[in-house]
Length: 378
Ligand code: ADP
Ligand code: MG
Image 1 (cartoon, rainbow, N blue to C red):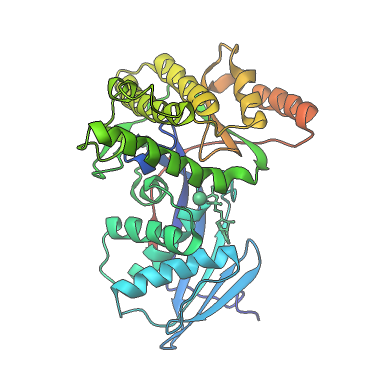
Image 2 (cartoon, protein in one colour):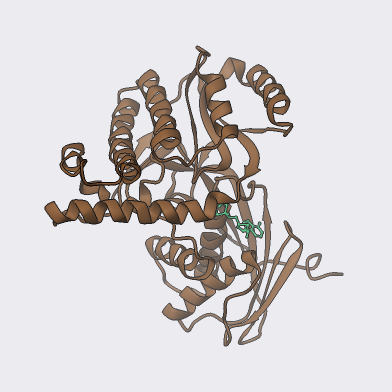
């Protein structure tokens, strides 16, 4: 029998991926987003192994095993190991109650497709160890330390949205999240005859990481210029269009466009939350297209594959809205589509996409679902 065959867990964690209906690249500018967890998730099984210090984590997805000692946590050259080790580093800074454990990971969440498998992995590990060793961490602690792990060990300076959505979501609701105060409003997601269809381009352009950090710096550069006139603006979220226009003559046009996109996207999220409350899916869909247009032209994080999928949908009366989702340069589009045509449209779209790019498209219906679930074995 192998380690995996004879693995009897003390507890199991279901840690979901997430979608974001609208509000892209706004989280690290401390603005608004509208995510929810989905029914695709990472399952993590845990057990104490009796050792004071030795730990073993095995991923069934890449069939790799990470062995480490709690007394010697350091960054690894292997990317996936840093998600684990980063969380361990953050946890061990906060507690001395963790001892040796084994963990097995299995996931049906597409990896690297903008559905945030990274946050699901971090938060699932932190939540499992919190329960296994009775660490007494709150859900908010889990969110914050998981993001710190991604910043400090993986090196992605991400906002708070992914971790928050993975942990805090409630089935049937989207979260209107203020990424500065972490105040969240749960809005019922009533889509009537419409569904949320994810179309995965199955590409990931290598630009993604470097351009992400470039955008972060461009936003900071714009903010600094605005702060010369408006020192109380702590983030781009505090900046209005007239404030930005005051420095239009002085600011680099590219930086201007980045800032303008963020200001407009924050406004769109607020408008979209009102549209949902008013049951106005048509307006909601228009805001999704507005978001994509801003990401394509002003923030410039889209790519030909994503634009092709969104453009294909534009004249279809059964699609209310479509946009790229996630950091960009690949990953998925999210589409608000009438339930009766999902199958036919997916087939048509897949053929058109293959013809254009010679790549197979993947399609999933996103079912809004609960945040982290912990099940203790008896
Ligand atoms: P996304 O969060 O959109 O899926 P990221 O690039 O942020 O994309 O994170 C993907 C990375 O997370 C993978 O490259 C891998 O290192 C890690 N990861 C996610 N799920 C798993 C898993 N089941 N097993 C091992 N590593 C995983
Ligand atoms: Mg990620």
